[in-house]
Structures are given as structure tokens and as C-alpha cells.
Image 1 (cartoon, one colour):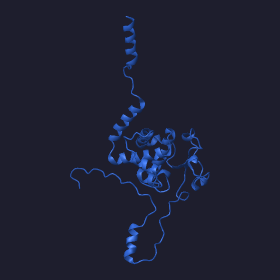
Image 2 (cartoon, rainbow, N blue to C red):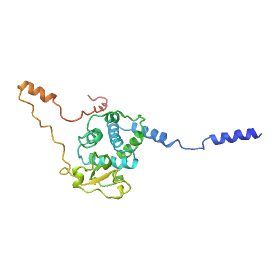
Image 3 (cartoon, rainbow, N blue to C red):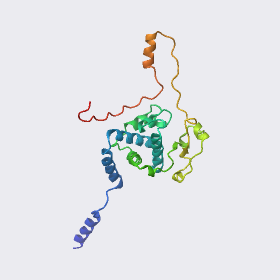
Image 4 (cartoon, one colour):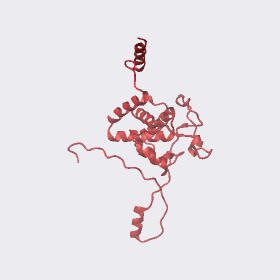
Length: 236
């Protein structure tokens, strides 16, 4: 009898309670994939670029969320691009995408089903910010810059950061300023666009000059191909 009672207790302890939730990570991933599939192909691409950006900047969710809102602010004010893809790939803006590196290759290879540590968290935060109503914005839409002092190759901040003042609102009160500082009101005068390629090739025949114009490097890192949206029936 004692043996039977012990077996019964073991069964009760091993059996999950009615309505018990699945582990948060697996449940969150299933919810994300379901919501992600409901997006159009171009919306999915935008969420992926936003996730890649915040994943490249931090592994802390509170920092990733604020970085994501900076990117969204840029998109909605058309600062350095009209889409998340354009904003993230704009030269000299987000360091992980500035030049070809193994890390850049890894980030560009990530998909909604990738299992690299921390990636699924970045995806969920990116989707959350992408779909959030404007009322959820944690700081003004003019907060479009940030930098991470601990990630700088030297102790000198970017020129635009030296000219501006860090944003001090409640949304960033819990962020360590040694890790991230956010800035409001940095315009094109303080953060000018990178200069266009202006080097002049040596004098050569017109035919070779035209060929050179087509083949010479632009100075920018090649951008990955954008997905082509499916055509609706009856459209060509």
C-alpha cells in the first residue's frame, strides 16, 4: 500500500497543473511566428531589419526597445531613409553594418527561425515596436540619435553628441549612461550626410571613362537584395 501511495504522489508531482502555461521562451516564439506570418512580405522584411539593428546594438531588452524606437522615429520623420531597411543600412549610422565583417554576415543571415542566443528576444521587441501605436512612444519623435560610450573606439563622442545634450526624460532614467545615451533635436547640420564619392579617375578615352563610371566602387557596402512582393492576380 505504501508503495502504491508513493507512486501516486510521484505521478501527481510530475503532472502539470491544469492550464499551466508553456515556458515563456517557447510560448513567446510561437506567438511571434503567428503574428509575423500575418504581416505582408515587405512588413516582414522591415521587422527583420529592425530586429537585426537592435540585436547588433545590445542584448538587454530595455536598451533594445529604446534603440528600436529611435529607428522608428527616423523612419517616421524620413531621417536618413523612408523604410527600416534604408535607415539601418544608411552609411556611417549603425556600426555593425558599416563594412563587411564576419559579425555583419552573421546578422544579415538571421531569419525568424534562427536560434542564435538573444535573437528571438530581439525579434519580439522589433515586432512590438513596429506595431505599437504612436501613443506608446517613450520619448519625442525627434529623439533620433544615440551612441554607446563603451562601444566607442576612443573616449571621444561623435561630433554631433558633443554639440548636443543627452535626452533626460523618464524613459531613459533606468539606462546606464555609460552604456547608452539618447539625443533629441540633432539635425542635419550637426550630423551631416556622408560626402559623395568625388575622386576623379585619370584622363582616359571617353569609352573607357563610361566603363569606369559603371564599375568604379561607390565606397558603400553592397546592400542585400530586397524581397519582391507577390503580384496580385490579374496584375503584371
